[in-house]
Amino acid sequence: MSETESNGTTQPTMATQPNKAQNPAPTPDSGESTQENQPQPRKKLGGRIGRFFLNMLIVLLIVGLGIFGGYQAGINIRVQREKELVTQQLSDQFSRALVDIQFGSYSAAQQRLEYIIGIDPSFPGAMEKLTEVMVLSTIPTATPVVSPTPELIVVDDTNYEGLLAQAQQLIAAGQWQNTLTVLDTLRAKDVTYNTVAVDGMYYFALRNLGVDFIKAGNLEGGIYELTLAERFGPLDNTAHVLRDNARFYMTAASFWGLDWKLASEYFYQLNGSGIWDGTMTATERYRIAAISYGDQLYGDGQFCAAYEQYESAQTTGQLDEDTARRAHDAYITCYPPTATPAPIITVVPTATVSSYPNP
Image 1 (cartoon, helix red, strand yellow):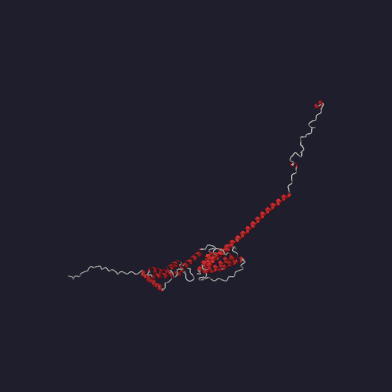
Image 2: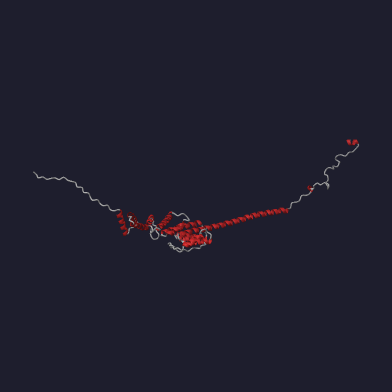
């Protein structure tokens, strides 16, 4: 028997006693929080969708701004490029106008300057030069001699390849002025078309036209064309020498009839060069200048210096009768003949032999 039974009493065991201390029920007055037992609020689906579309809108806005910015940048680049091409073309025309003014081609210079002002009225120096040209054009100037050229028929000026081919044919035929007319037409239509080939043809035509002008005696025209050719490339030695001689001839001619000494000195350096101005060669001018300077020295009593001029002029051609007489007189005066000394006769005494009668 168990110990409980032996005592005659029955006591409840721990398992049968109610556990009142575990999980007490809350009372209304307890004040304890019941948030842990309340359900959490569910997130709204509409908020997520709104944020998604907002983000998409921002991305599209950024992409659109980028595309618009690129488009504007492309337009700005194209406009800037067009401005650069126009500026280049106007600068080229302005440079040619300056060369025209330098050589007295005022009509051509006026046309170029009016063209520049018509496109860009604020182009630096254009208005001032146009005013200068209009004043200078009222002063009469000598008309340069221009060699006649065959009549030119320009092909369709919208066919750039046809214009280029026509220019090549004219170069092969040696028609330099007509070549330049076709090239000017082509460049006026499109300054960027086949630039390397067109520039090369410009150089070739201008160079050969300048050389032909100088050989024909049109010195100013030749210098002008060679100066334009030099804008497209360096001149060869032949063209350089011809242009230098032409300039030197014009400088020497500026002393003609004013200073025979300088005229003779300058033309002496061109003696034998073959260059001429359409009237006389440099050699002919040297001969006349040397004789004139010799006459001047002869009149001043400087006979030795005068004879040197006459003698130098005689190397280029025969002296006329009066000049030959003055040259002779100057020579006699400068180098007078010396008196021939009388011969000295020495008398040698000789022994005399006396004759005696024979005994």
